Length: 320
Image 1 (cartoon, helix red, strand yellow):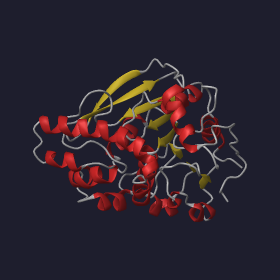
Image 2 (cartoon, helix red, strand yellow; image 1 turned 180 degrees about the horizontal axis):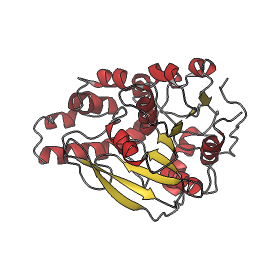
Image 3 (cartoon, rainbow, N blue to C red; image 1 turned 45 degrees about the horizontal axis):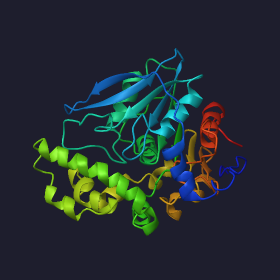
Image 4 (cartoon, helix red, strand yellow; image 1 turned 60 degrees about the vertical axis):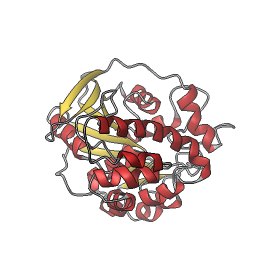
């Protein structure tokens, strides 16, 4: 305990199939529309990122961090906002380069890039009585690392952390993404990442080794040639081993939920920290058999099972 067994996800066929559960919401889910107010936050390194707010006068703020090459417009963000907006104000972050406008420095974002998240929380903590951090996939690792690595003084207003479909062991998840059955997803990610590298090079950042784009066929290659070198990690393995959140999970001291499906094709067995959860009464691991990657989908567009679980966790601080 707390490995959670009380919350079961038993979807109908074909949602028991991991790839179907992953792809269905991306392709067919009807997204709720939200009247966001966009605010630009300028950073100390003369860059910026954009945050989409939904403010309804609540005393609590849910900060939502999207996945790789997602945005505040991602369907899983929109679905969760719909579930939370009755009780929470929402700040949906768009990482640098993810809001529709290219950022100004050579660097973009990565799984361990927490400076902008800290800047946002520092900006908002005096406005709210309570803050919840929620991250999906890459964003899940980001919120875990932010609260655990000790680089920043954490606001006492942060009361819960939720990480969904989180590759908390980046190295082994990286190997998993090399498998043939993930090629469709990897190709989609690389299409936009490569475009951004070309645009960055056109901005005049000569440190980007543009000739390596032709040798970049996997996400591991991208991290080896670009993410690692541009962000000071040297290479892909340096990045993965520096930024993985799993080695830090023994430090969890506020209610933290990891929600990972067993049939998530992105996640290796190392991304299911059962031993850490058994040994920490603040770390909740919920690992249903089904759900895919950021899926947990069903025929109805709203709400998804995962969204109900997250809302329950934010209210109850426990699931058993």
